[in-house]
Image (cartoon, rainbow, N blue to C red; front, side, top):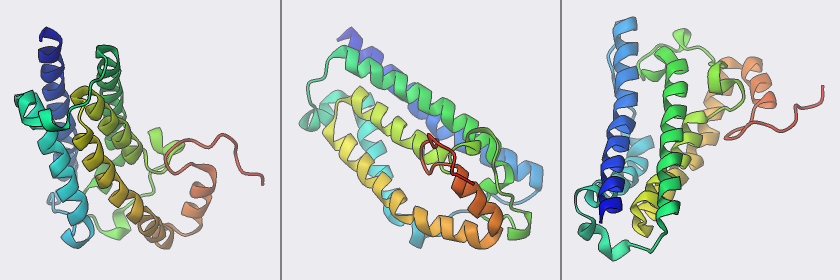
Length: 199
């Protein structure tokens, strides 16, 4: 019982930090540039948002009262759930690092002429570190809650992201041309390349 309360408390703290990081950096970018926070176009992000909302509803429901998610619980050892908490904490560190390097590129209304190809911080080795961190975070949340429903909705949300990544990369290639092609050749999509491409 005591360990369950500790996991619920940890989970709530992680979710609050998780949701606060993008808000903080988007507001900081808006204040620095004088542009509005704006928003993503719904037709591209609706499925992802709905699935993410379903996932987070399950997470919060468990944190408030585990009985609400008892129907989806699986028995996991305390040590495995503790690993989940550590993974979530690591992922949030990655989130902070990646958001910090994105700068004004976070804002949807930033003019194309002002957008820069970010190749610093985690972007030096990986093209989509935010998505990589999100996978680790959702894995951590799934282990902490020991809920297959959280895991499945999280995986479904991530699948919608993975499906649109090629379109995102085509847009970046059209915007930055050879600079992006060179960047893509020396970086991994989600994990660093083990070998640099031959010249």
